[in-house]
Image 1 (tube, rainbow, N blue to C red):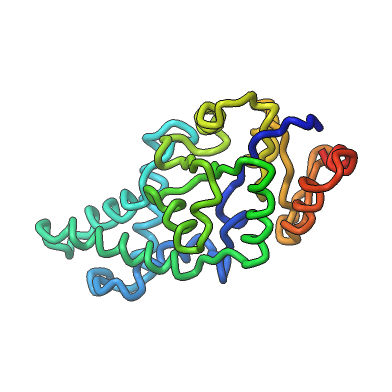
Image 2: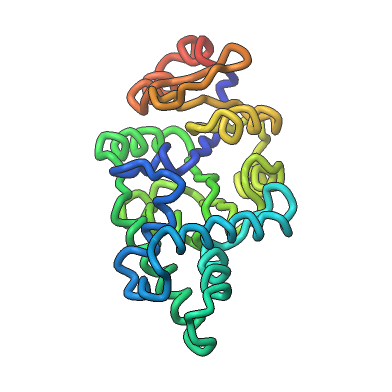
Length: 247
């Protein structure tokens, strides 16, 4: 590994920020529906979920691969196709679902204290940044702020603000531009094999996979990986010969 590494790019969700419970696909709809105060417009949650799943399919059908869109569009789709909602109330109902979803989502997020300490140590040697997929505008920034981590990062690049999701090259290109350094002076760290490991390598970055026990992935080749942030700190703040073994 080169000794002039300047930046570490981090994925956010399930890398920096963890959730008290990992959501299943229907949970995202449930987080908007339960406690929203507008549940009565649908016969039950199953009816709402059916429309919610239809929204995902229809929105994706008109977008380019890896093109991003805002989460509220899903709820607008659901509301627009619910005949029991008065046309003058549709915007308010969609906003209510969105606000309930985001409030519930935030309540389930946290950053471990030992991870914050490790990030502080890494920030003494490297510049840190976040490059993450997310459908809430400025949502990653809010999560980092709520969990006492916003001052650790030079910048945050998200798919919703960029318009493109990982693994689109466009989101990595923008992050490299913000870093104002060569791509081979950047290490990418994240838990997704394609988005956080393979794609950054294709952009000539180095990458380290956060290989948690829940990944259960058969890798195509030998992978540079760590199991947790303690191991990551040991590698990145240790002797360069130790890092070379990893990367």
